[in-house]
Length: 346
Ligand code: NAD
Ligand code: ZN
Ligand code: ZN
Image (cartoon, rainbow, N blue to C red; front, side):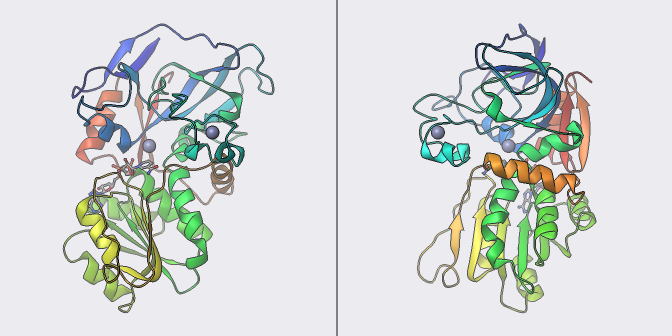
């Protein structure tokens, strides 16, 4: 089968021919319908050899959807041909976090060498993929796989972040979304669907700001040296009750901290290497700062229900498997608006 692999540190990913995997006992083989392209892969492919956490070659893709092709021994509860999406942050299934559905925070994943598909385990940008356990699948029940696959990360990650800040996003409040790409343009929609907050979107490109407005941002502001002043002006000098940074670079975390109101939440989702000093006088009083990872299994089901109700519409651009390297190049260059989705069997 064909797969997109990251094979050599520092090189571009390549489309290669590899053997089609067979499901071992307990595993599920999916014929991949759609696989999303996340900016985190670009970060992974920029990491140096020293300390690189995964074995190479690595089949990329941590947003996956497919149809059930074959079941390993002992797997029950799934029909051959059923359309499903993959919950990506795999855990052990047994620790207290996994028991709560929070496999993204599994206490034993590192020790047991359990890795998400595309981030250690073979990923979704391939004609077929192995899912280690049926509990890591969510039936799509009529949802379109191409439109829905980005929700497994670009939807779930912002949803998890936003859900934690809901008590602060009361009528009259402001939510700031920094970086309205794959994750950010879904964040704007989740905020509009779940809160009465005024949504202020920041990005560096006019195309992205245009998309932010289209999907529901009340205000769209260029992310530059004047952005802080602009957001403070828009909030009458008070700042935002929640700031979600989907870039996480030095200038954006600095903006995030500067526009955070008293008792607000700053959530740094982007992995751009920026850090935000916390200490008396650094930020407004009682600001909470956190850097979450992905989301829980029950939250993924909730995100799908949000999509089912029609209030979340991912802006998708599709590519064939042969075109997958180009999708990564375009994401790197900042010219994907919304989410790139690969159709490995399309
Ligand atoms: P993306 O490339 O689709 O979107 C990033 C957006 O940020 C783009 O629209 C870009 O124009 C914009 N941007 C770049 N520099 C900016 C700046 N200085 N100010 C404002 N906007 C700026 O990327 P994505 O796939 O949506 O991922 C977003 C970030 O979230 C990445 O860092 C990714 O690695 C990270 N991520 C984290 C998690 C997690 O669990 N913490 C999960 C998924 C992705
Ligand atoms: Zn991701
Ligand atoms: Zn666990």
